[in-house]
Length: 79
Image (cartoon, rainbow, N blue to C red):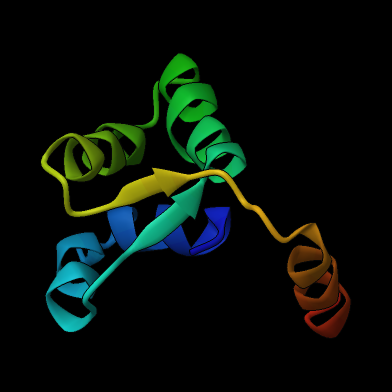
């Protein structure tokens, strides 16, 4: 998931629903930094929700191995 999706799902209390629908829910270390670490410093409650889902094993933080896939997705979705 990207940062925006993670934050919006946490804000609407739907983050756990995603885990129930998929075998794996992954975010990158960069998304973790933006959606959890940066957001916690700014006082956003959704960061706490996301952090709890990670600690409880419902979301896994992984390093992105294939940077070309990220570049393609960013290009395709005009990000």
